Image (cartoon, rainbow, N blue to C red; front, side):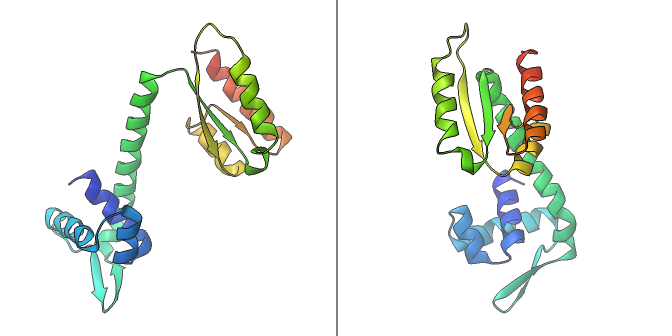
Length: 166
């Protein structure tokens, strides 16, 4: 079983359409079919049933899907952690769309002019407030700028707590 096969399976499970899933994965439809076929052979079960031009997930696919998603997420987290270990001074900043035109450029200018003993790099992530908070709590962001004052104070606290534990 490969990560590629798991990504093919999860994408096809979401779209329930071979051509659409293949397009999302930048694969040909036969390559996607082959990956699914090989995964089914390894698992010893049928994951999808064809009904003319449509497909549906079998009970085995529905049961296996959360495990496949967890495996992919775990791999991505491990990959991100190794990247972070190579550059531990990367600050991951999250913001809402409305800040991207006036406020964020000023923040960037300020960050680039601050002289610190250590060099930092920055990664930016744009999303909605609830997603930013989730990413802070899941340790996927170091700092976020959502619209609510209460949330800003909470996120600023989380950020400062992490900075001072480096």
